[in-house]
Picture 1 (tube, chains in turn brown, blue):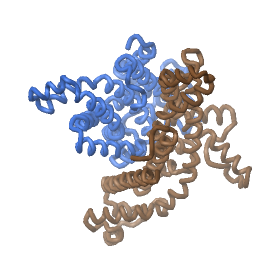
Picture 2: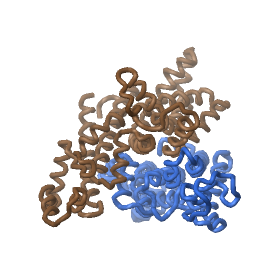
Picture 3: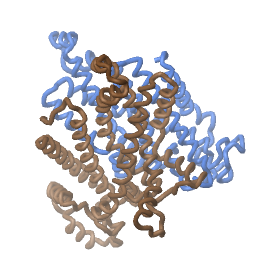
Length: 323
Length: 272
């Protein structure tokens, strides 16, 4: 178990290192001499100042040395400086990270629970109107762009009936504390989390349904039935447990898409997370910040993949913690 | 394919969308960028501007017709590029095996781990938004599943007798891969490709929504993005283009499912 985790962590670290290297070259691809851009952002652009910046940030050094300095910086969580926001990139990201984690984890939980629930229902009543309804429902949500679902949500629940706030993390100026504050944030969280969750719910519904129908036909289910187990027990203990394996794999694969969806959702709902930060960086062409967010997103995805790998091994009794 | 009802519905939707994209601008030559009426004209009030106008008095219907071109073109071309990258990588990994396989698959996994939408945003932002950078970025983030699928297929085909026979008769590796193996991987690749076009359309619209569309081309995502700030006054500017995206993506997904049932009953839906 421990060696398995260690191995995965090392593998993840190597991938992350490769992403950081890729990032370094992406920054070099960005239009304009970084020193000139920085000088412009700092509000001065005479030659001496540009030269000073070049020396300060080591831009006059050979490329491999620059790469080394950059990688060393990222390892110590120094992701550069955002001149637009006048703050270190890592500080900006760390401030915004909790909001993104709250949003993505809530959306993930919603999508997984509803998806497995609906998928189980559809498989249980395969061929009936309920199955057809769930399948169509999932197909439609799977085809909707997230930004549009978000806007339709605002149109329905904020504009037409004034039930939910259309943007933000909390009511501005309300200065709520304790439980009232939690309730306020939760009210703001409902729409963004549902928006982000619905797309993934559709995928998990389809996956669970297909997977359950597949497992149902297998011999061990017949054996369980022959043993005289009740239908509920067979469904829960034999069919669902085995059918969930591909769903867990899919959840791991989707973690990157979840982060991408968060960028869109946070942008529409002005949710103060790193997705919104990425959008702001994009608008201001703040490449340091943009690529900093990108590295952190990749790190989040790697962590998430590691967790799903572990969960997979916990759910699947056949796999042991060797390789 | 024609036996599955969802496939037929999907095919009809796709044919409709393609004919709108191809012939629409000829039948409806109003430029989507031109002011034709007063701003915020509600839909269904004037027959000449059936879906109303946006905040600058531009025709929403014209925008949707011209947008179909961009969405479908970007979807198809970027999928083609992804196939051009992914198929050879997968074929080589599966055929040669060993170290080649290891190296190519690590490379593929690396690209699969990077959060795709975030990478697409970064690439388009750095290369500057244009139809080329958008197609390139979508292709860069969508080829890994192709490589993995083709590798898996090639891996199982490589040991078949007819391939062995070709090896024994002294055919070159290139000839065997191109003539004996790849044609047999075609059906699962077609299924995957139809689903990839759908995903590419969603990706393109999301990029355009964030302001990363080609500034010279109108697209559905751009229209929704532009209508977003005035959603309280004018719902139609965001609703109609979104419906267009929904219907096209739905159509392509249905086709993918129909093809899947028809061509390849074995392939499960997790390969995407």
